[in-house]
Amino acid sequence: MKYQVYARHNFNKIPSYGRLSQDQIQNINVVSEVLPFKTNNYVVNELIDWDNYLDDPMYILNFPQKSMLKLSQFQTLSQMLRNNTPKTELAKYVHEIRLNLNPHPAGQLEHNVPTLNNGDQLTGIQHKYRETMLFFPTQGQTCHAYCTFCFRWPQFTGLNEMKFAMKQPNLMVAYLKENPFITDILFTGGDPMVMKTSIFEKYINAILEADLPQLKTIRIGTKSLSFWPYRFTTDPDAQDMLDLFERVTDQGIHLAFMSHFNHHRELETDALKEAVARIQKTGAQIRTQSPLLRNINDDPNVWATMWRKQVDLGMIPYYMFVARDTGAQSYFGVTLEKAHHIFNEAYQRVSGICRTVRGPSMSAGPGKVRIVGITELQGEKVFVLEFLQGRDPGWVGKPFFAAFNQEAYWLDDLVPAFGESEFFFEKEYKKLLKVDKLPAGHMLKTVNQQYA
Image (cartoon, rainbow, N blue to C red; front, side):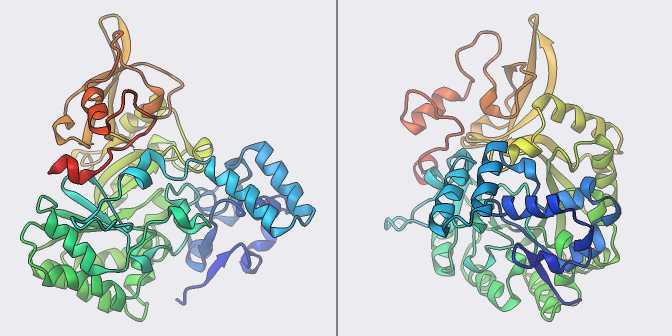
């Protein structure tokens, strides 16, 4: 199949465009001024149920919805478009909206970009956890289609000063050599699998040819299996990409294909099943993850079905995330109480082979914090929490307690239980930040100082 993009400028070419109401067309035009919108012929022809599109999770996953903006923002922007407001004035208002959508949660732009020992800032790298480095190849900063919930939406909008990107493999390798405790590199974006094999191969070759005995795993964060499985079957360089995967595994490096699936519908097409089988033949392992999303998968049966289908296809369920506090979180977010309930209900409906999944997890400033449970201790109802990953590795696995709050959507909404003044990690966290009070969702200042 030949790849066909549909976006704001041409979505009227979609075969099912005639099913959209005038209100829906208006909603898409308005909201896509702010949030990125792109889909493709595979998604619209094989994943979306156009007979019930208004409630269809695949439609909501790709097509902007009115409630993804505040009503006042939507109304003002609609009026500006009707009045043919000058582009500079329109762009200024859109920019204001975007800045109010918390474009880089957890301080990832300000506090998670490392430097080389010579002082060069590496704007295409994030290093949040000791063993894992994220790399954003410049040519991979788009996707085959955009998820409406995407927490990296600034990568695809006009916020150029907030983008992560780098095209110098030598700087990536230099940073790995300076930090021998890094065992895993994660190629992310955007989606690295939008790149031609000849381009992606340059980054992989740089790693394979370097003397990096500590590097054990190469991860690829991707939505391509869901949004364009033909990348691994019929695209012109599909076999070349699979051959590259096999080169990695033949060198004894674990290749972890971190695939994003948000609903079991994405696992049901013949194209998907063929692509999965071809990737697995290279020796790569496919792990799966998704945020928990109101209006798309906030149902335990959806998750249980999804995990079973993934295991049936030989994939490993890995993470359920809490919807991150950015972009259209007000549309997609569920309370932490409901997230815990949905995870537990789904977890109880599957066999042990599916229970490799962890969650619900918040990728917050200090680390990945999992909701272990809700219980009563010392006469107080509490959330039981633990770090799955921490900015300080010593925090990992230590249970801690937050006062129960049925309105909480994120870690920043919680306070310590039992009248304590701070969580166990906060004193060390503030010391590392060199502050007296923690800003919401804050990161550590530099990873180099912490891990030296």
